[in-house]
Structure formats: C-alpha cells, structure tokens
Image (cartoon, rainbow, N blue to C red; front, side):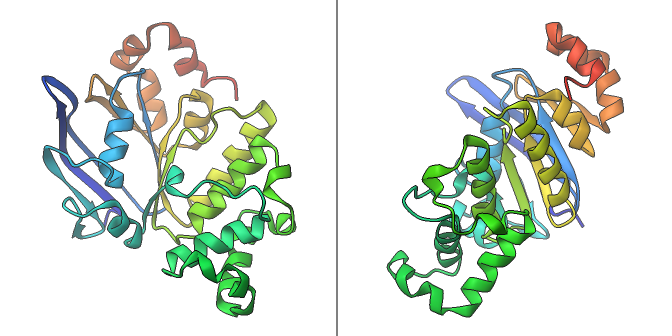
Length: 255
C-alpha cells in the first residue's frame, strides 16, 4: 500500500492551469523526487499535497484515507508533514528547547508549559530520540542563535521529525548550503528514508540522482516523465525541457 497517493490533481488560477491531472504514488521507505524548470508547478503541487491549497479536481490519500477535504493540521496529525511547516526557530532558546516546543505542539500542549517541560519524562525522551536520530544530541544545550545556516537546517529537520511523520515533504532542503553542508544533508536525507516516505523537491540534480528511488518531471504543470533516475536522465523529453541543463542530467550534477 502506498504511503501517499495523488490522483488527477488539477489546480487553476484564472485561465492558467498550474497543475494538470497529476498522479503520483510514493511507497514507504522511498524517496520520490519532483523536478522541473522554474514555473513547472512543483510548489503548487506540494501546497496541494500538504493542504495549504485545495485542488480544483483530484484526490489525495494518506495510506487508505482520502484526505482531499482535510486541512493542513489534520494531515499533519495523520503523519504528512512539510519541512517548512515547523515554526521559526527561537534563537534565544537551546536546540533541545526548540525541539521540546515542537514535541509539545505535536502533543497539543500549550507553549506556556515550557518551564515545566523538563519534568515530563516522556517529552524529554522524545526530544532525545529526535536529536539522536539525526546525530545532533550533543547540540542539545547549544543556543540556536550561535548555529550556522547549515546547522539550523538540521534543527529545522529535527522539528519536523518531532511531529513523528510517516511522509516527509522536503522542499529544497539544500538551498543556501555550502558544498560540505550539502553533502552532509544528502547523507541525512538518505538515512531518513529507512523510516519515512519522502517527497523531495530539489534543484540540485546531483543530489536528486544520488538520493531518489524514483523521479517525476513536471513541465508546465504536467508530468512528462516518471521512473527510476537512469530512465529519467536518458529521457529525450526531459533533456529538451531542461535545455542548457542537459549536462547536469547526463552527469548527475556536481556531487
């Protein structure tokens, strides 16, 4: 059974069709990448999957459950979480306290319980589990204000994981990272797929072809190709759509 299934999603803004009869199926433990030129409709598609936008036509399933009519918070509770849905990091708090706030939100506690949260062993255990799961438990006492851009990305991922998602929507997780940070993030994302189904939107073709089990290509709101990375890289329509980016598709980018 698919962890996430999208059937015939269509979204129009006036006379412009931004997603046009898009269907996808993402399995447990799979990284499914969405790629396409700027303006291809990737962000609009992700917004419909997450619940930020209502499609004009089509259906969205989490497991066997049709969630098309459900709002974003309901989908989060069902285990569908987008990376940027987490709140902004609180710079004056530590990494552990930031994750603690996310855990409390997931458990529907008020943020006013922050001072008492250290007394709740279950919350502490989930914070430790979340940080350990991505290898940053030793950051727990560090103030977020002192973290680099790349380190903050790790904490943002931790806040997302605090919601205990079944399906992760990662929207350009490598944006703004250095080469070293990008390679580290690629390793982290690869490790996450053992526990989650992942939909990845990313412009870095090296990362896409290193990570993805399947790749779907959108152009002008329609799927023009979908398959394993080798099939997609060799697809003539994909190469034409990317024009000057042919080298990245053939070589797999810089990574």
